[in-house]
Length: 131
Image 1 (cartoon, rainbow, N blue to C red):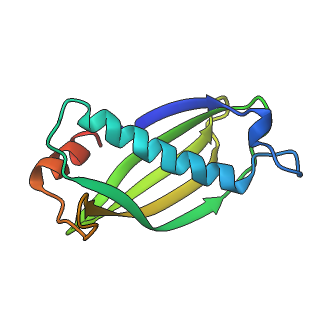
Image 2: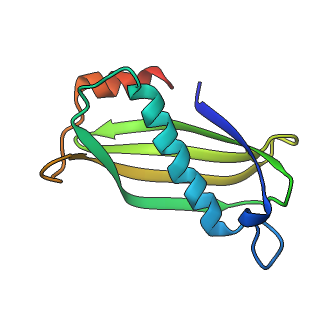
């Protein structure tokens, strides 16, 4: 099961074309990744690293409008060394239509040195158990 959140589109999310701004979708992509990670580690004090974005690949399929209820889903698709690939899908909650799909490559970094840190088996197990 992917980690899921719901939001309602507000006036602040809307651009000059009267639909959700593309940058807002990217913000939601990053926010759900952060929320998912915080959910996974909420009872773990021994986390030694931080996640930073290497790249985003985002496809905008359909617009969302003021008042729309959106469902944002995420899961980690793969892990290799210090890198993970996270998938985020943003859907219209009522119609179940996919609005945006994003794949992000994240790099796990040592909190102090800011150098890449191999993702431990314990963290892999956290990420994979949720998917």
